[in-house]
Image 1 (cartoon, helix red, strand yellow):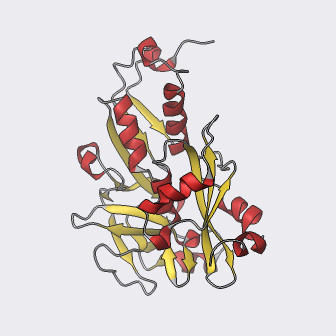
Image 2 (cartoon, one colour; image 1 turned 120 degrees about the vertical axis):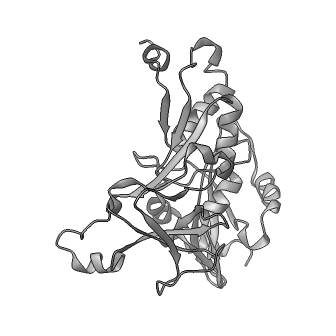
Image 3 (tube, rainbow, N blue to C red; image 1 turned 180 degrees about the vertical axis):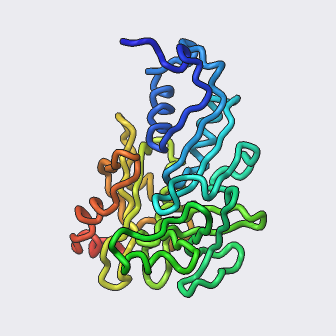
Length: 282
């Protein structure tokens, strides 16, 4: 076994994805990692990107690493990667936000017609700046769907608070419409991740004969956990009634190499089985 890299190289910044941070914290809780065995005095900043970051995760991280600052960036391939929206270490009180527009960038939260939504309402995040792509190569139709003048419509649903900080809500394509109500799976996932025995969770829509779709939570429990569906449903009483998952499925949550949940795969596994949805309360 080689020498630990952080103490040896005096690394000062760690770049993580949500599941990696979760794995480190779980290993500490299980006693597999003893922080007293490592000199982490140079380690000053924990940085996460590529997906919405649960507040509960950062709170838990800072309980283990109280001297660490926290930062995050938002971006996408069509905007030359991260940086068009940036939180900044000075804004730790805004944990959960992706931040404000970066240098040279502008951002708006818009409705389907491209009009700004009211502050606090959910809409699609649009960005404008020096890194926006020119086009999708030889695909004018796809280009026209996301480029509107100088603005790039990102496909990410977001909201903006009174201070101008932007919070990701979900991917537009992942929104669940149940009985006319819009459900944003990330909000439900963030709530469930606060349950101590949950290792990972993904919320998807599955067909329902009356409501169109219902929210199903695929929950991966921590090793050795005996948590029951009834216990999860009791915990979910802390959510508004319409946001509570109608179906709980205990299974592994698949993620791709960048740490993002593979929701298309989950929809393929569970979404096509109407019988599953028809067995829950309507």
